[in-house]
Image (cartoon, rainbow, N blue to C red; front, side, top):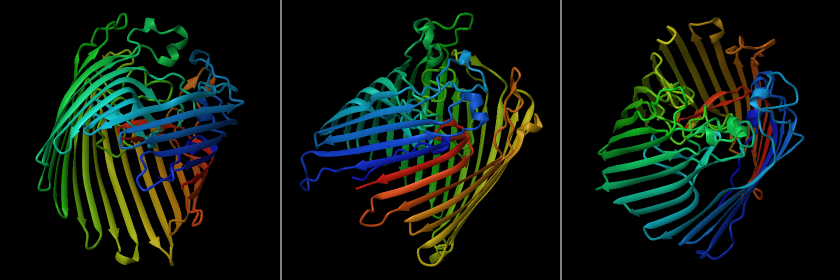
Length: 577
């Protein structure tokens, strides 16, 4: 068993060292008990994050952090156990202030929590009795496409949520599978984006069940139900000093749905429909009691593979659908959204659908691949319409609709045994908003070329340009451009230089009293160097990232987070054996 590394840092202007060790137990060919362990040490220095970030979260520059993660697994054919211990320690961190006392541009304080923290982050045990598997502790769970329930780990955006409780699974291979779960939500308590400590887990209660029936290797029918009750459904239950942390009372929901999947002679069909009843015993004073209204969510996918062609059609529909768990503003804490389910993404991940409450749309994709010439062409067009949304108090706002159309084209060409390959893609997005009678346009092009040199050497060149135009103010029209040059030597040594430009000034006209919101940087330059050490230390990998990096919204699996700009360096040392 090989090691793993937890990568933090780079996004926040840091110097980071992380070391991961994995030691398998030396024993007979089939040991009755196997033991695996991972030790990860992270030392981090938070550097200068720039005035734009400090306007949002305060002054957290020049902070040193030491983090240790110890992961242990042990088990045999009957029982599996796992444990993870987390420790986060900070030296001379800035003091934390409450939101009402925060003043942008202030010196020496922050909204983030840099207090030392030690905890058992993951603890679980599973008993395997033939077709029956019983788990107690922390586990991941997702039903269908995750519309009704999805507690998973998404490394790309630093999301790691589990259900802490019990899971019972009974399955007859290729026939029947039944899953019953119940417990409270447990989130990763050190935010890898802002590095703040989230001291309390959400502890929202979830009970769910799903059954799947497989028919003759061609069809799968599924049925599921999920009941979510927030930790606090009445604001009077929350201590006054916890209101800013818990973001007020949550909104519960009862969701249920069914799915059907068919695979026959190159034809793939997947359909899923869900209904949801919003539930809150005491709606906020002075607001309409709409919590009992119903919500709906549906997804469908139809594809046909007839080589060299593949065509796929997707469709989504959401109406008054509660997408996140405890609806506390934008999520639990200041920057850690806790997603208990997610919208199926129909566009490129960096394209954000602005409303998770009421939305509907579709996507059509044509994919042509010719193996003989290593040629691939993908033409896709997505459209979506969204309106209204769910407010922090659980009420709905029914603002006018916004519609989006976004066609894209991607081409790839390989050049046989030469190893040369080239990829080009582009698209155009047009958006109409009836809310303020505005239009927005975005076009984007990107290219990627890989060219082998003599022997094991090769280079890779990438470029991307985006033009954003929103017909409101000139400040909402801006360019984003990125280019990179990389060198690789047989996978052992890699060097990459990256430059990015952005003249985005969105938010620059916001002022706090006599203090004006600072502009972000325009030019970003950073580099990445990696070294895979050959035998006898072939388990050692070194990676250095240094420079300034542009922030922005990044998404994975339907979960989106806003990354800040970063200036600093990340050093990783990973040893696997």
